[in-house]
Length: 322
Image (tube, rainbow, N blue to C red):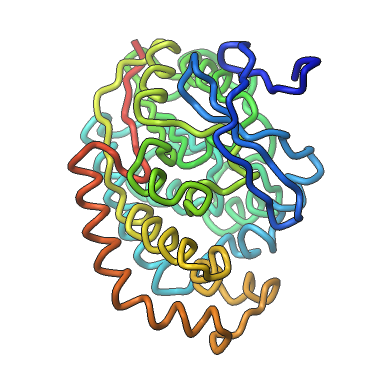
């Protein structure tokens, strides 16, 4: 940050002066979302301290000790969709080695392992890393990526909804390029600030997630960044069933005056809900119940429309190391 109080973009080192909007977090601290006109991305300011982020990401706040975040039926859907993602990756690389950054409980890596892949994971929360090690017998470490592996160590690197959480995303992509084999595959998924649900929701957009999301990308800005880091973009998906329809649904509920992310909190696993017990019979619960029959079909319809228009709520980009 410079002497005038404006943040500096870590991707281009230019000062950001335009404020897109401001938002008050759960801690009642106000954050500002700035736009970098050079990179066409947004960034959150001020960045929470390492201690603040550590508290939020710790097991029991962000996910349960089992690594699970949602009620059982949603966990089954997530498992099914993860298998589909494995199949998409196999259309590029039949079998090999894969690194998953921000691997959480290790579900994705376990599915890849069962298919015969050599898997390694990185996680920010130590307890989640321990769970993945014990439950799936997967090599997962808690810590940073920098310099841990030799050049051209992996066939695939996966970064699923993690890049937006990082203070220096450009450096991570450079490291991914270094450790990927020539022609290796990088899969990156992030929320899309140029999506229809972002434009509609503004501060109410579910995927904004201030202050945890430090950088906010559009489809164009992510592709531009990947190409700058010597990747060739092959596929840019604008529809993810596990993210986009619910993103619309929760955004519309947020915009209707219901407590922010109320439905999302209700769908958390029982362990997480103990941390934030809210009764379904509250005013917010009644409003949510009444609006669901209207908003649910609309959320699916809007997700399809925005995907067709190339403005999906989240994007998943498959790129090849040059």
